[in-house]
Amino acid sequence: MIAFDSGVPGSDIPVTTVATDNKAAAAQAAEHLSELLGGKGKVAIVCNSQTSVTGQDREQGFRSWLGDNAPDIQVVDVQYNNSDQAVAQQQAAAILQAHPDLAGIFATDDDGAVAAAQAAQTAAMTDTVTIVGFDSGKPQMDLVT
Image (tube, rainbow, N blue to C red; front, side, top):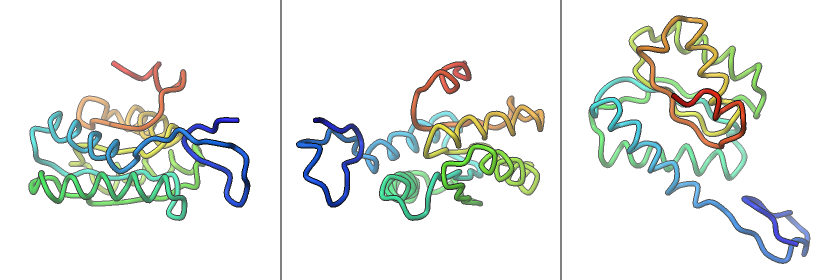
C-alpha cells in the first residue's frame, strides 16, 4: 500500500509514503502571495492545526519565507481551527473585522481556504483581500478566479 501526504504512525503499513514538502510548498505560497501583494501589506494565517506536523510545517515555511524575503509583509494574526470549516470561517470573519486593512490570508488546508473566501465574500472584501491556500478539491477549484 502507498499512502499520500502522511503515513500511519506506529504501523508498518503503508510500505511507502509519497508526501509534499510542506515547508517548501508553503514558501512557494508565501512567494506567490508576496508577488500578488507587491511585497507589502498585512496578512493572516488560517491554520488547520497547531499540533499536526503538516500544519506546523506549512506555517513555518510560510513565515520563514516572508521573514527572509518580504520585510514589508507583516503577519498580524494566526488562528488554528482543527480542520473545522465552520470554526475557520468564524475565525476568518473575526480576522477581517479586526484588520480591515488586511491584504492577504494564507490558509494551510482546504477548509481554511474555503472558509477565508466565504468570510471575505460575506465582508464584501473579495476585491481587497487576496487568499492563497492549500489543496484543490472541487470547493477550492470553484473559488479560483
